[in-house]
Image (cartoon, rainbow, N blue to C red; front, side):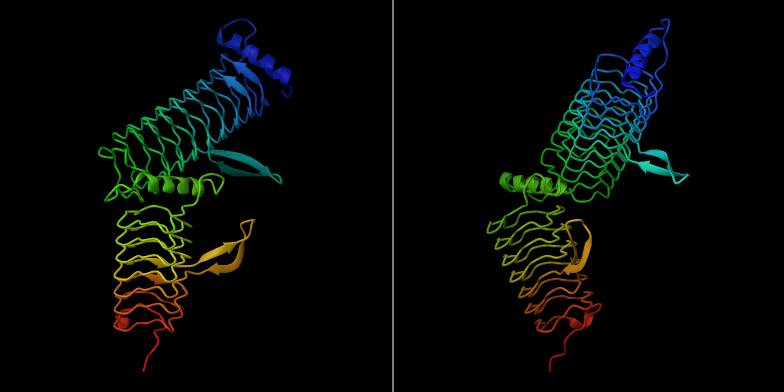
Length: 424
């Protein structure tokens, strides 16, 4: 069936089928075009509609329980209050849809494997279910299977996802405030920048999850499994509200590729002793900041600007500092164990690599008495850098030009590799 009239007639016959009335017939239609259709409070229970097109449809309060909606397209559809109990939604696209107060209990939202004909040959294509920027506030998703689903920037505030399978799900930038995640499986999930305030995490498996840029100030992780999580450790001291606000805006900026939020600009601020460990602060600006004794353990600082910053006694263990700009920064007596000062490949507007690399700028940086053990320098600009009495055991300088770098008193005999200048 292809025409809209035939589809509407089939929906009417489906109502008779559900009521066991004469003339009833189960709705079965592949790739049905129901885009922009308006329906409310009818039942498509047990309907077979794989590949159906519901783009921008207005279908509030519709019953899709046990329906076959494999690969269906619900982009920007209004599905508020609809029910999808035990529905097959594998590979469905529900990006930017409105699913407030919807019931997706035990729904299957895993990736879908589709067979595509390519020049007469059958090939299989795995398509992830897409719930990007979807409004699921107040929804019921108990026991749903969302393994591998993309829920980035979605709103899940006050929803019930207890006992749901959220293995390797993408929840970057999502709002999970007040969400019930009791017994949920979030192993290897991406929760970078997500809001988890007042979440219920009793018996929740967060092992291996990415918790970078997550504000855990109002989150109780005491009864959750947080083994091997990335970032998200409880800070030694909570960040002030104004700084936390800047980081939240920065996280949103990273998540949306600059479409919303704002890059962190803290230039000139006094951030003495603050703990930024585990965060993703890529491309943030800390120029001329006072960062004495601050913590940046395992922090991502790629393309970050820290020119002229006072970084005396900072701790940067394991930080990623590819393409960082740190010219004239004072890093005396600081700890940079295992830090990577790598380069960043430049790309054009289409995302294609140009062949040029943005190297870390450490010119005239003061590393005197710093602990740089096992760090890695990939052709960084170190013109005029001071490494007097620095501990550089196990450091990989590679092809970095060290001419003009002050190394007096440093244990140069313990470096892993590099062209150490010989002074006579």
